[in-house]
Amino acid sequence: MRAMIVDDEPLARRELRRLLAEFAWIDIVGEAANVREAAPLIDRLLPELLFLDIQMPGGTGFDLLERLEHLPRVVFTTAYDKHAVRAFEVNALDYLLKPIEPERLAAAVVRAQAAAASTPAAAATSGINSGKAMTVRSSMATREESRSATASASARLRLGTMVPAAYIRLLVIAWKKCGSANRRV
Image (cartoon, rainbow, N blue to C red; front, side, top):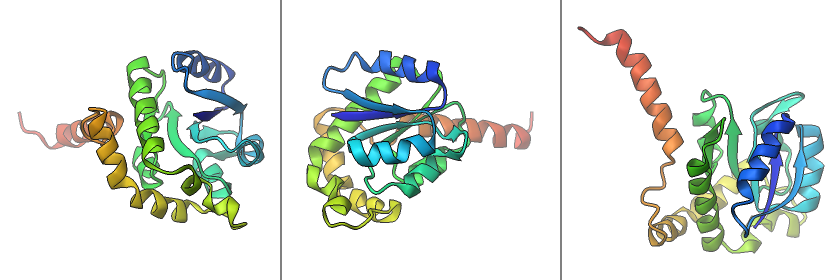
């Protein structure tokens, strides 16, 4: 699977590359440090999977997604948990908090592999082949159609639920913050 890393921190890119070396079927085809560098590189290299930081100089990971003609599957890699809900609104495969835990990365990578296995390659690049830009919204519709196929592929891989653990972790954090103010002792 062709993958690309977009992160403004060189050490974070290097560590992610090191962790991904455990997965022989992932080929890191490029890296970028910001939105300006990443957009043309993604459209030229056509990765199937994008490991994307959110907070970067010159724009966010969400800004990048809106600019892309080729929209790969996305795993957000960030130090901030406050963007998780929005990440899943743009249909991210996963949301990994830095420092990235190898077990969480492995789960995200297996999820990406299952999604790729359940979706034909042509669907991922249909916007390019027709000469039209594939927007985040149209990509979300395409991915929504393949959600049931992805879920069945995940069941075959015994991943269990498709709800990422990071999302559940964020819900627990939010519950604790809200609940601690309202609890009576």
